[in-house]
Image (cartoon, rainbow, N blue to C red; front, side):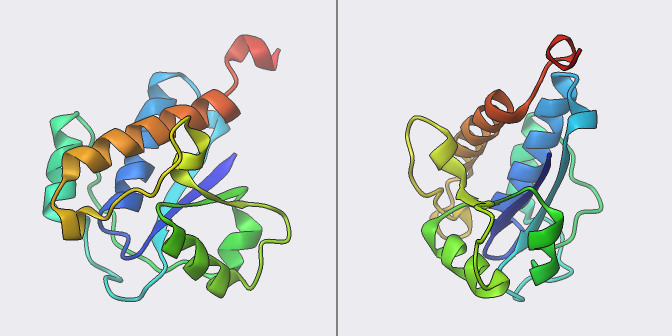
Length: 155
């Protein structure tokens, strides 16, 4: 399963989701089942590293994101990835503006995989990286529950 997490700038929410998901799948022994990345809908932050407060929040939980720089999503990402997950409704609209359509039903909202669907607020504006951490963690856990298979399930 190839997953692309997408937000506005690719410096807060989507890289947090990328690295939380990578850690969760590694801890579950499922790394070989997933390819995980993140991107932006805008060009605002291209080439910039993960925003320092997001980096610090990941580090508090033993998760590194060294070397990650923001990139913009491309139309080709739609063909490559199995799931393209936006953090909020505006991201979904912007993703569809890039891809042109969602003919294969690959585009989804992160929290729609949980039992409490809602937008993940942008901590760049709210300053609440704890809330983002909590939402991203819930969303990633729900994705693993839906798409991850244990080794015994694969046999």
